[in-house]
Image (cartoon, rainbow, N blue to C red; front, side, top):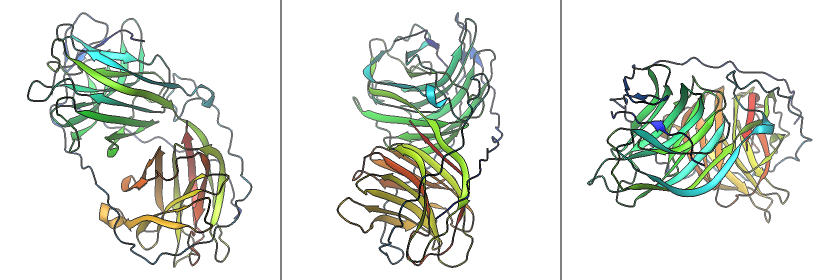
Amino acid sequence: MASAPLPTETPTATPVIKAEIEAPSTATTVPTLTPTTISSPTHTVTPISTLAPTHTPTLTPTSDPTSTHSPTSTPTPTPSPAPTLTPQPTITPTPSPDPEKSATFGPISGGLDHDPNEGFIKSEFANISVADMVIEATFTNPYSTDHHSWDYGFTLREQSNATAASFIEVTVTSANLWSAVLRDTNSASGKRLGGGTLLNLSTDTDGENHLRVVAIGERGWLFVNHEFISVIDLTGIERSGDAAIITGALAGNEVEGASVGFEDFTIAGLSRRHGPTRGTLEAEPQSMAKLQTDVWTRDLVVESEFTPQKSGLWSYGFIIRETESDQVEAIGVTGRHEWFHEARDADDKDYARVADDFVSNVGARVTSSKHLLLIALGDIGWLFLNDVLAAQLDLSHNTDSGWVSVMGDFLPDHQGSPEFEDLNVWAP
């Protein structure tokens, strides 16, 4: 499945539903990168020399910040259909690919052999065309940092012809650094998309590291060893393209005869399965308000903007993995400045508190209108409040597919009647 190698760089309730489309944000440029001259249609660029440290929060739920209630759920309303989305041509940046063409690749395992004399990035291409995706793999270090330096990672959204290529490159290095760069071989410049210090990377001989990138439109999220590292600005290449697993992205990071092993190299294409929609969640006394979407999935990215309409006690968030046997995961925030995760299993009609904490512990606040985003992949979830990681969630007790819903006033004494807008659900 290998294709043409890439060049090496030198180091460095009854809701009202209404469709709305969000405008893309603007991007910022970064320092110019200088190419290394090689005889190849894809040039080599100089690496970013300075990377700002990136904080990697470790979240351990503390004691319940408020009294825990056992809410009674309201019957699920009939799902309201999502607006039909018309896919845009791949030559035009689009927030998500055609749902009929969402790509899936792998898992495959193998090795990427070092060849320091070749002058190219070593790569294994998936030979697909996808823009929005979850790309991941577990890498085995070729040797320890005491022996030599190394790097590995992914390229995303690559399009190329006989003379040029452009792509996004995300790598980690044995110097405990990560970087994301937009490369365009038509020019000597490159654009830094993100970078920083890693606190949880194994650099030992035969050490293993799991890397995952979630990419949707102009936004990306990097995870290393299942911990969230940083949001990545992907503005600049939002169209579909090929993806690859790589090593030797920086010149001098290879040793003759060495190899980077990888396992479970997988790509799951994401498509927008619901949204954008909006509405109001009016709860009956002693029950929550809930709008069930038309999406049945295990893994997803779901987001919405919420605004309580009444003062006093209120809460809002998402219901995921609601199975036919009444398993449910409820995840959200309250006006008491906390996030919460409650679950219900098939043998119990009541919800049980799984975890909670004050959002101020991670530098976030809950006041009036807030943007909530949840990424759920396998047995782990990540809840973001206004783009700040509020919680890492343990979903290992429920890894089944189920319905996705938006909910308000989860606890019986909550009567905020929140409005929601720009509700979107992406899933494989």
